[in-house]
Length: 447
Image (tube, rainbow, N blue to C red; front, side):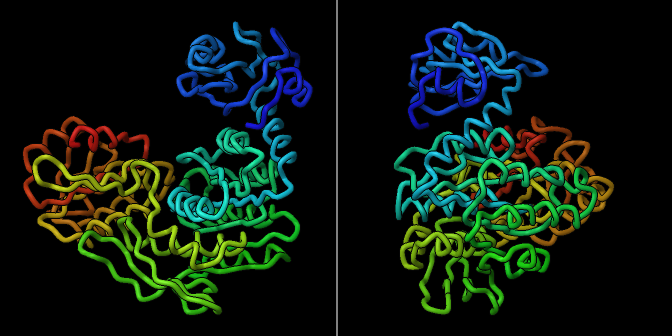
């Protein structure tokens, strides 16, 4: 964060400074006291199960010098009535002070946001100092936390923007209008919350509507719902995808024996080969999105493709790992929806080896379509895996869809026990579910 004295923070957010108002915040803002660092700002919320103010001293021991909260703490504190609003206002103020020379890129979509954000951050970082969302901190708290990590030297600010309701992304673009708006796809993630795919499309389109004057919309030419968003703005539009009409096109796609894609990225002016160190054919589309966004931000194609060749993803996104038993693990346990599950299953099928084992758990927030979607993913898995291990009671429809290839396991402990008893040299095992299923516990136990 740019250096700000406590008294200045209080003035910016309309709060009052308690304690030494001359203390200067120089480090990042955090919500978790354990993540505080030297010079940092600890943002304290009163939650349903814990009061963040009670952890101010712990944050101080970790290096935080001040607190933003709703009551005084042992550390110098800016006291406000609404902590979330104050955090957002502070973030907006800081980015506004840095806006000259700063290009802001927003990334949204039903799936692939984090992977594309990671690829784009790698590309932009190769050109100039870049600040990007850590992991999937993409909501009304995560976005301002990322904004506050920007420094005077930052030239690119990459913000992953998620949503669970219509209007969520409008609220985020209200904090900072992006110069480049990347929309990846319109799927069925959080369908139970939105109610319809049309509502999901409307919400993703809010990023395009929120563009800064003179900005650029970067849209998936392969997704009709996304490419139709060009009507939402008078700003320039740059498309990406595998269709021949895409402005940035990924073609000649091939996979090696580990399921890693190579392809050519082509524009009207240039082309360049890419070999990604990542698993899954779908990463070619994410890479084309990252390259298109980089072009919109002024980074040439040759620099972008060179950076893509060494990029990495946030943890638990098709993360490969060799196991002691001689099997291979694909840990994709961070989250899941039907579309991302199919992409992961395609990646599993592409890897050369012995048996392919898909360990699948519940996919949350699918509403009335949940059982049908789970059955469909089970059937899809059965066509690509030798064994489909459905974990937990809620995953029973996956087993039903997988038919004779299914094994139904009661819980994560049962899954670990079954896998330890059945994995052999050469097997490839995929672990995939929504975050609430905590299948990361299964992956961790195996590794």
